[in-house]
Length: 109
Image (cartoon, rainbow, N blue to C red; front, side):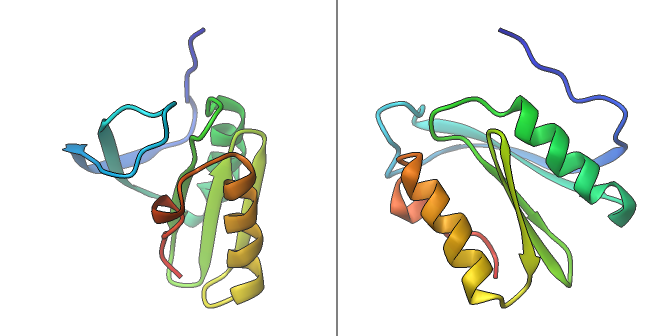
C-alpha cells in the first residue's frame, strides 16, 4: 500500500540513513531520518496528515518548536507544551502499547 504527504510546505534540512540499535522485530535496522521545518500554522495539519500515513506496528514521528511537542502515531496525535510531564508520559504510554522499544521513546521535552 502506498501513502503520500501533499499540500503541506516543508523545508527538508537533512536526510540521514543510520544503523540503529534496539529495534523491534518489526523495524528495520537501518532508518532514514528526515529533519525538516514547517511553518507553525502547518504543524497541526502536518501531524494530522502523518497520523493517517504512518504504518503499524511501531512507527511514529515527533517534531517540536520552542513551545510545543507533537508526537504522532498511526491514527493518534499527542500535542503538549514543552516540559509537560503528563503529556509526555501519555504519549510514551501509547508508544509502549504499540510495542515501540523504550529507547525510542526519547523525543525532546
